Image (cartoon, rainbow, N blue to C red; front, top):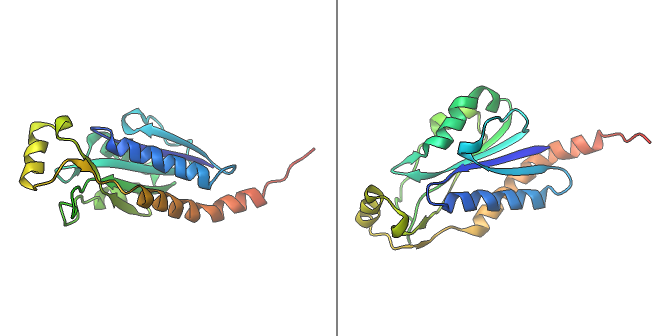
Length: 178
């Protein structure tokens, strides 16, 4: 089984989440799957993958263009794959915005995704653009890393568990000839 974990990340925080998801999947599915982690802007083909996990940082309620483009350009093929989506966005304690920070309904429909999860993000004002700093200031969010690594790994474990029946049937159906 071949798995692609791809993410669009403006300041690196979502990319690090994608890397952690990739490591967790590789560990959970060791010996049964090959996991590739890629930046969304580098995804040219998805045909060779059985499973695609696609994520994006959320800015002003939107996925980044590179991730939206992966769905738009490969929607027909993605609908034939096992697809999950993830977002990185809310920050602060408690997380802000408190309401759903992104609407991915259209992306889920286009890709045929089986689910979507939102992970808290990271804020470093020095990396933010002016408009982003203005929003963070208005929300009164302190700089910090709000990512929940155990939750990221747990979600990757849930995806791996959903894939295991397929992996088991592939393995049990394999016949070696010698």
